Length: 238
Image (cartoon, rainbow, N blue to C red; front, side, top):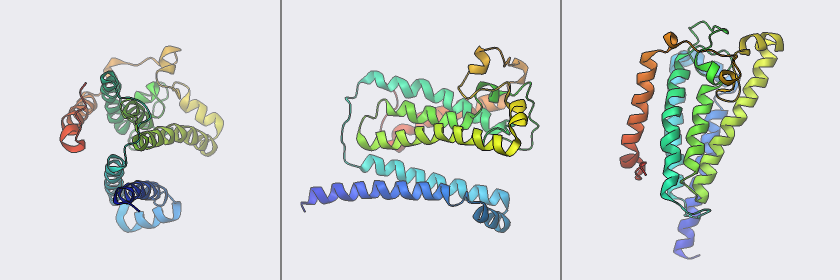
């Protein structure tokens, strides 16, 4: 086998291995028996810290492996395509910042210590699954300027699991809570972002906007913008 072919095969093998490890790192710890055992040993905070740390390391490996995979173009890059992530990422960062800090019994993440008000659901009224929509926005927007096979597989995978995850969580929550209880909690929310706002079910109050979360979201976006070129090796700006 020629050296170049062996190098390409090795790069694809690394990409595939990173994918397998990434899926396993999320699927295995989420099993109830294993999670209970780890939580009993590490505590809830210790488990979440370990889970988050491993997830970030494996994600970094997966992104790096995609960059090292052979370049197989599927569409031509145009400078205007950079507008997609630049417009989407501020929204994704704000969704994540508000979603992490809000009470949300209808999805994963959020602050479990806060009480959820179905009449004023906050960011959950804009999108029932704010964290998953943040992932979907990030991945779909990055698909546009990254039209090579490895990155299409990478970002397409994240977009798919984010959307599929929302459907699965809605079904699972309805089974656990009961359909009537779930509908009572979700009556002023919507699967699609802004749908409850447009049809009049959700009326946000400006006094409920948390300036701390707003600042965190903006800071996260600016940090990602500043670190993109030195860390990823590509400027995010058009």
